[in-house]
Image (cartoon, rainbow, N blue to C red; front, side, top):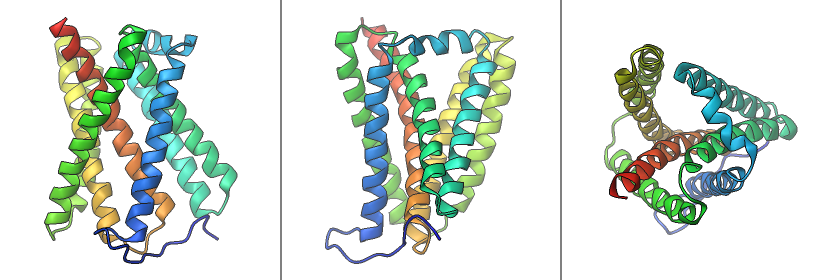
Length: 230
């Protein structure tokens, strides 16, 4: 038995009840993650990035394994009807994105952190809205975006492996992994649009992971932009 049911009704908002459940669920998970980043930055865990990314490929593999593992565990819990396992998977995901984000946020003074998180949230919301508008405005399938996202992730890991020894290549790795999350976000939004009989919980997890991946990359860009202006 699944831990959630999939149904939809017309809400009069332009979105079905199922779509609103996915949007609301992913938004709540993302809000929790942002709060976690803000809290973790005050703990020794925020130094994890400094150790892991001494060799960039190590950091990418550790966080990549945590995110992939957390997703697998969470989805297995949902499909198996086991709330405990699903919760463990979500904790892993929240922890991975939270610790990574806190490590990035730790580069700026505490007083500036709320502003930076707010700016990042606005940018991510706009990016998500643009991608969602594009997906919903076109009747074609976006299944290829999921495949291209996988290629981008693989290319990003390879680039970071090379960049660990040839530093200028690291930028290509960042761009490819960021692109991977953007493509996955489009793919997950398409899933919500077209896979109307799919599990709401599974779709919520998919959208959350994609948005969280975009968020931590935009966060790095916002911090770099503010640093260049300072």
